[in-house]
Length: 603
Image 1 (cartoon, rainbow, N blue to C red):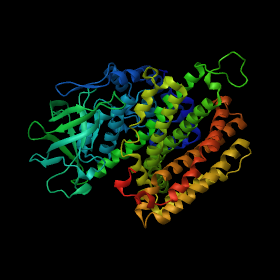
Image 2 (cartoon, one colour):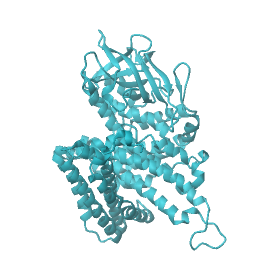
Image 3 (cartoon, rainbow, N blue to C red):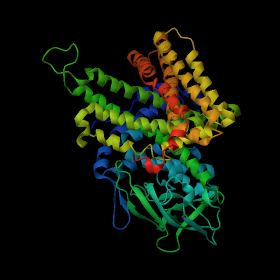
Image 4 (cartoon, helix red, strand yellow):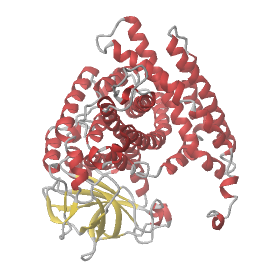
């Protein structure tokens, strides 16, 4: 399997010239995190991920995690040691507040670190990902005592966190959960019930796991209005805040999955041994969904990032294989000689498709991360509000468009390999198997699309999304003396016209008949993602052209900058035009979806 090398040049370029990281670093909270410092941090992180985490990817897939007879779980060989080194190096703490032992860096820097971690080993990365979301939930909703007892240990990575929503009968319908939480005289609760699909719900990496659990209290209203959220630690804390006696939480089984074998996906039973597991309510009664949505929104960007990260790892493998594998004779090659397959046009097309989507997704994910930083830390309330709306628009697109593309890119890697890609020993198949869960995680991609059209488009009567489209229009109409940038912007303008038609159709029809909006939601999200990435790649190309024209290429080699322009042109001319072809699906309405009775769908 190809070794992983962090794409540090592209990461630095996107930070410096697409998301305007220097402006983020100028915010009062981040005065210690200037661009040069961040580039140095990412360089060291890339080395760590390449040397320590990436070699575990194949081991994790072939060994997997296993449940022991006593309900404990053992992770694959090398995982415990690598996780301890990850904690000792301080990587989990980088984007969290200094008051809890964090590095106080911007969230977008944490996103860049998370990209490298996930590319190195998605199965390994899922434990920190869930912990990160649990930390965010406690930062926003935990009381002072809960933050004091739990956050410092979680920020450091010394303890990990989980999200416990799903139950066998509920699935994505969280309101149907039946787990109970009975109040006790001492202010605690006794939690009983079963949760499924709990990522790293049990493992041997840390001495404690902080489970965040949704449950109902007696007399709670039905549906999501009656859900509360509880901290249920794997081990109870003593008076000094150290893990002591085991809580009544047991791993009943771990799932046998298509991919991410290293990650133990657990069925957890709460309270099977007696009165129930001890839990501590977060916030007020019946406000659990607010707490959990904080965690889920954090995780949705992180899951979208998995599409980028797996795509990057798959692309590196495809590129290396295409340069080594000889087959057939390319046009113009000497007779009697076989050519590296990278010389064949269709292989070049696949590699350029992978490269262009990856660069577009990196711009998209980092733009969202930087918007989170501005929404939380900018001094101007109007800027904070605008960026908060941007985060609302982009998060479902990052999650759904990013993970859909992750699967497509992993599949293209197999296609570049040909028959060898279908053989497990090459490792290409692992990327496809691992990536396939991401469109399902944290609300399926259909749920993300529904969120986009039902909740995010109507913000400010639709003006929020129209403001975003106006930003894209300004880029498309910006003058340039560079021929390639002109081609890119001209194509962007054409496809933006299609996105505007689709958006205005949804704003006009979606509120009167929700089924019209929901039927259009998935193709609309795809159009939105295609055009938004085209917009960001246009900015990327324009910046690369400016640096070349100014002769300021000390930071980036001219060949790198010229490749940025070519990649953006390829995207604009060969991938972006898909957007226009999907507008008919957006505006077709829902009638055909319901015209055939279910019993006749089989033919």
